[in-house]
Every structure is written in C-alpha cells, then in structure tokens.
Length: 125
Image (cartoon, rainbow, N blue to C red; front, side, top):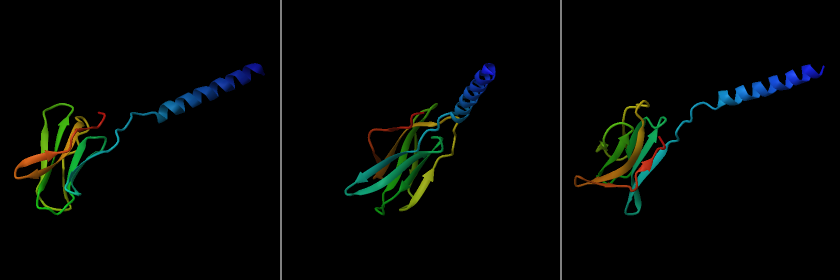
C-alpha cells in the first residue's frame, strides 16, 4: 500500500510539472507606446504591437502637421514611417515577427524637420 501512495504522489507531482511547463510557453512582448506633445496637446502617437512585429503611427490632433515614427528592427538600419494624411489617421508597417521592432519613437513633422520623443521606446525584444 505504501508503494501505491508514493507512486500516486510522484504521478501527481509529474502532472503538475508538465502542466506548468505547458503554460509557460514563449513570453510575448507587451505593446509599447510613444507620444509627442507639442504645446498643450498630444500630436502624434506611435504603438509597437503584435509581439512587436509591427509599428503604427497616428495623427491625433488637427494641426496640419505630419507625423512619423522612427524605428529599428532587430536586423537592419533605422527606418521611418510617415503619415501626412491628416487628423485621426494612422499608417502602419507590415507585421514581421521574424525581425521584430526593438526601438521606436514618435515624431511630429514641422517644415520637413522631425521633432521626436526622447528617448526611444525599448520593446524588450
């Protein structure tokens, strides 16, 4: 009878360990946000999402200025995505999870000059 109880406890412990391993899959990166405030208003908002495979930049204030996001992927040089479509519009990159975005910052574009949030947001990837 003692052997049965030891086996039962071992099986229970083994099942608990397997359950914990099954639930502990790869960690997913959280969405990150970068904003640019100019004057008293938020003008641009950039969000890294989709396990940080993509980034979106939105124009959130009707001021006539464009917005942009500067970003780095794990492999490659700095890239810029611009949006000159006007208030309440967004532009986004393709979702490339095999080459995730690692750093990004929102920018307000005034007279062809990018005024960006500092520092870059780190996605943890």
